[in-house]
Image 1 (cartoon, one colour):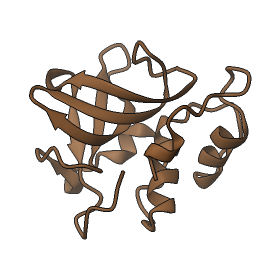
Image 2 (cartoon, helix red, strand yellow):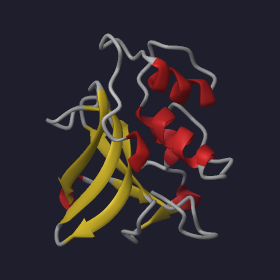
Image 3 (cartoon, one colour):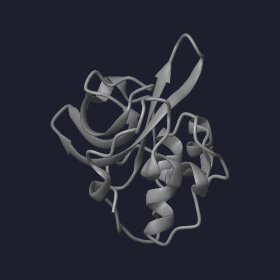
Image 4 (spheres, one colour):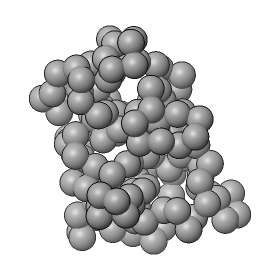
Length: 142
């Protein structure tokens, strides 16, 4: 489900477009808002999970869901020191040595948290602040 969205882009570069707005709608927001967490919520909803369901990336990492297991479908959180919080989230596809491959919304080729599309990203494990497991019942994603 997550991979089916690979290549989705914003319509005008302003957090908009049919797909982006459908991600935001799952969390109760309209166009114009950052959408990395909304993308994750949309993917989980389409896969039959009620949670996580938030447009706020820090909400994706409650203490009860934190894991050290790099399993497909787990969430990766990227910490931004200037904001003093997790400010970007993606869905882990696989681990390749010291790297995590993830599907991420509202990013770009450089890995920004304010990008324009859904990308497959390769990030060094040292850049991953936290991982969360919302699929303890079974692995159905990505």
